[in-house]
Figure 1 (cartoon, rainbow, N blue to C red):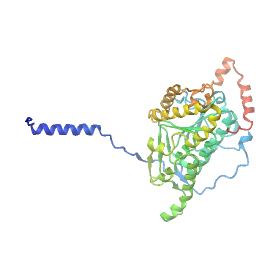
Figure 2 (cartoon, rainbow, N blue to C red):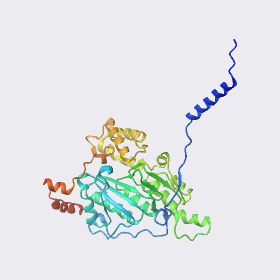
Figure 3 (cartoon, rainbow, N blue to C red):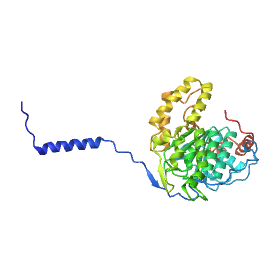
Figure 4 (tube, one colour):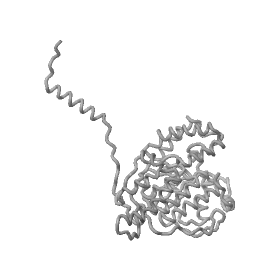
Length: 382
């Protein structure tokens, strides 16, 4: 049986069409994002210096209202008692970190049950003081939902480690919202969070050594070795991948390597903190039962696949999580505070003006009562 011969041009056309279809179906190669950083100054980046650690504090702020004078100078901070930053905004800015200034800023959050600390600026010693004092006040007020809503292009490595360790002991969630960044030293803070919700850009580069006297690569390496080891120890004890510290050293400090969602997951810098999750699971089974823990595991597996990878903003990620919870029986009647994304269930704080108009409370009396309660020693975390 003979087949008809096709014209050569038809054969070539068919071959080209098949090649074009194959090219359309082939996945585009992944492009790793590297950008020039505009933040290579002494105030930002990943800065390390020979500044000694702060002396041991003589005042235990957990047991007194007489906090040492402190003012926030490295950035701007505000307190909100709502997770809805789209409708409710970020609250009123404050700089004075004295006891009653922090108390007044956080007072409406006691009834709401959540505090969201919005911070934009440099990671420095006053930022560490801010984290410590807001966390301490939240403990005094029994506010268990604590969110650091950060936008920072970096700062002092040593202060980032101190702030991260403080957060690790105080139950913080960290947000990097759309249009916000967490670069350089800020990346270390992510290891300190119990949970990390990331929509903005996270990037790394080499540590910038300030006031270095090195005249060779070997001498510079020796100077950086101590802080590099401190970073790795910090990451390890907080459940993050120590490889990120090594990766940082390969990116020139004039550039910024943006981490992909896959890399953030690989390094343990997004979603639930693995180290804290292990500790929480032991406590959770005792308190809420094994079935609760299993449902929680199922929820977070689905949440990470369906919600955490969304690139439309933190608010959209939260909405996706809300919609997913009923499938796994959350919020749980027995343990509502331990249910996933419990911070999203708190009621909006009532303003003092509205409450006064309704005659529901005496604002002055409430403030005085809250001051007395806040003066009591902070409860230890269970």
